[in-house]
Amino acid sequence: MILPINPHLADVGSPPIPEAQGWLKRYDGAHGPVIDLSQAAPGYPPPPELLARLAAAAGSTDATRYGPIAGDAALRAAYATHVSELYGAAVEPDEVAITAGCNLAFAMTAMLLAKAGDAILLPTPWYFNHAMTLGMLGVEARPLPCRAEAGFVPDPAEADALIDERVRAVVLVTPNNPTGAVYPAAVIAAFAELCRRRGVWLVLDETYRDFLPPELDRAHEVFSGARWREHVIGLYSFSKAYSIPGHRTGAVMADAAVIGQLAKILDSLQICPARPAQAVLPWAIPALADWRHANRAAINGRAAAFRDVVANLPGWRVDSIGAYFAYLHHPFAGETAAGVAERLAVERGVLALPGSYFGPAQDDHLRVAFANVDAGAIAGVAERLAGFGPGH
Image: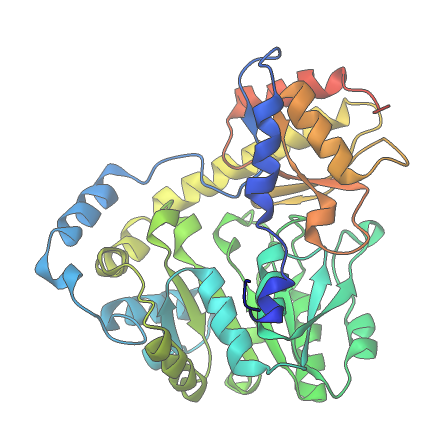
């Protein structure tokens, strides 16, 4: 007999990306190599100098030891300086904690803000790891619907109506995963004011911040002055920006007292960010600025190419696009997104994720992660979708 396990864990679904990748086992290769648009992974390597520095740091004796609980002091200081310059805000090193990836940053933040039985608002479509984390903690992931006609940007007034005595925080992800939607600075500021007024936290996940087109505004207003410290927590991922997802390095920005509480969670978990990455990133933040800007331009070019490709495909429609992702409306009324995505993988060798992986009522869309494919692959998507018909 198998003894029972924590029901909060048992109720969480299987990891969705491996499930979808399993569909490709039935693809016969008739249309050419697989085009994998399922995962948000950089499609270019880190620069050689960064790799060399990582290798040297990994070979040092310091990399074999435990580091400071909240992250290496040099990296906390470098990130604080960078964010201060980016937002025109005075951020101190003790207001930054370094984590083993942004997923852990979110998990720790959720543990800090909410207990089992509480609720956190997640805009839908939502990033499935966020919903899975809350489910494992026994925290309700309360949907805040985002609609195609609004560009998948959430409405502060609708969020206000959903906040009750159980809600502890509102989460915003911008640029968004899965939709790619970029929330205007005024909308983010309105959410910050809403959260301040209602006495709940605003958790702002900016994993893909570095891929915003330069002409788009950022969340400057939220971090101006000292007031943000009372109710705003910022999350960030070095992994995507520096093309080092295997090193799993993220950051949390919050009031120093909040960071102190997060350090307790870090200490209990003993999950330390990669020491080589922490040693190298203080150099990389200023030194690789031009490299990051060039990557941003390349990714924005892929977004434009994908938008142009879909514009010439009858019935298909890009409802939102930005950073790494496009949210693609499929033309097959009455067919589930999972059915369309599975057929596309099996019949055409193109793997995208169904919208149903990203929360309730998402059966009209596929999430396309275009950042890890080149222009040739994007053109190949056009050829394969052009002859792709409805299921039977």
